Structure formats: C-alpha cells, structure tokens
Image 1: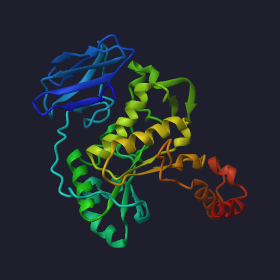
Image 2: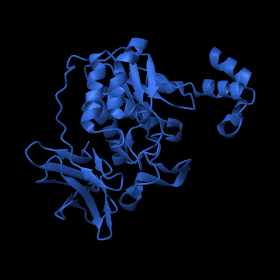
Image 3: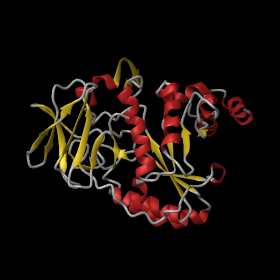
Image 4: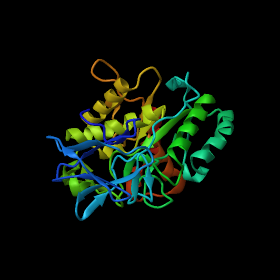
Length: 342
C-alpha cells in the first residue's frame, strides 16, 4: 500500500494522518481546540502529514470552510459518527502470546450480537460458559461504528472504529485475548458491500469511491476497480486480523459487491498479510460461487460460504412466508432437497 489510512500514532508524541480525498483542493487536520495542520497532497489524491498530536487527541478533517468531517478510517470516535475522531494508542500487552488459532475442522461457531450481550465486557463474562458448551469460535456481528446506540451493525459507516456503544478498543482487545486464553477463536462480521446512510461523507470529497451508474439495495455501489478503494478495504481486513488478532472474518452479502477479482485479491492479501496462525475467511454469497472456495497456484480462496438457500427454503417451509427474497422459494421442499443433495 502507498498509504496507511487514518491516524497512526508514531510512539514519539506525533501521529501520521492519511486521507484519500481526490476531489478536495486542500485538507487540514483540525483539533478540538481549533488548531489546524495543513496536509500535503500527493499525486494520487492522498493527503498526509505527521503532526505533533499524541494518542488521546480529538481531530477531524477540514475539507473546505464549510465541510469538516470525521476520519473515514477513524480507530475510535467520541460523540458518534458525526463527532470527533480519536487518535488511539495501539499498544496492548497481549497475554495469550502463544495463540496460533485452531484449524477449520475444529471450528464450532456461536454467532452473537455484541449489544445484546452487554458489549465487549459482557461477552467476555460469558466466554467460559460458551466454551463449556463446546463452542470453539464466537462470531461478532458487525461492530463498525454506527449512528445511535442500537443497531444490527449493518449500517456501519466508520469501518475501522469499534462502536462506542459496545465498549472501547482496549475492552475489545481484552475480550479477544481472554477468548484465546480459553482456546476460543473470535471471528468478526464485516460489511464491505455498502456504507450506512447516516454519517458517510465519502462522496463529498472522494466521489470515485462509488460507481455513478450502479445501485445496491443500500445506495450507490462501491467501485472496487479504484486502487485506493481496494486498499482501503484490504487495510481494514488486515487491521482487524493483525491489530486485534481476530481469527477470521465473515464477509456480508458479497453478491452485492459483484467483483470476484476484488474478492480473490482480498483473500490473497489476507493470506499474505497474516502469518504464523490459522485465519478463516467466510462468505455470505447468494450466488453460491464455488470458484471462490478453490485453492491452488492462482489464489488461496475462502474457507466457506453460508448456505443461504438452505435457510430460505427451510424458512418458507416452516413459516409459510414467501414475500421479498423468499419469493424464489415457492417450491420449498424440492429446493431444500436440492440443497441437502448438492
């Protein structure tokens, strides 16, 4: 990558800032006390600079006299998705230093909603009970910061910032460290097919992030043909896997991404960027594209896909509900048999 997005504390009282803003004429880092630091524009639309701000400082980016925005790669927020971004101290003293993960065939996943379990600290309090049930992996529904205090997680807009409603960066790392101490993997559900509608300012200064002529059910489609867009999401995946030591990622609704080349590049970058431990990559993919699961000389692929067709057929059989995306499952018994057979 030519740039690491967001604010990276340097450990010497300074922080490096980087923002892709190709539509902007100038960008400055603005602090809570009103100080401004002008960033340097690179040829590729990246604005960056190293300034005397240490961990704990609040900041935003001033794009124009009228537009001041949070960092799209913020590692922490104060005051919600429209509030101040926070320079986060990356240092954490891991205890389960010998943890190398578990192989896929040992993986028994318990999916959970962090808010419903009392946030990161609440999940940690339940780890021993879950391990006692035979769970070998917990999967957190999306934690990217979202508007308000309650959300399924699929309206996240700041993909690098753990939602403050669930706890702090330190609490999340402590949860993962504690899980590893009990032999439990921790997976994270990530949403790369869209941003939530409230708090996403990208189109104001990086319109190339989105395709002008293609829509998804949640808004304009993300343009993964753009190099810095690809880098943004690859950086996000590696951030969770390396900085937080998550053991795997579940990628939401990749059929809405409609770019298998990007998905394969993403898998390759993760395999290359995480060394020395087992990391598992899971797709939600209504296309049921088996090509994405292949391993070989050309790419390393993903480990598994959700069998949504099985779920949809069983749902129609059990409930009689055949509206929305269940309309394609009218012959539910035959479709369930096909799912089981194939």
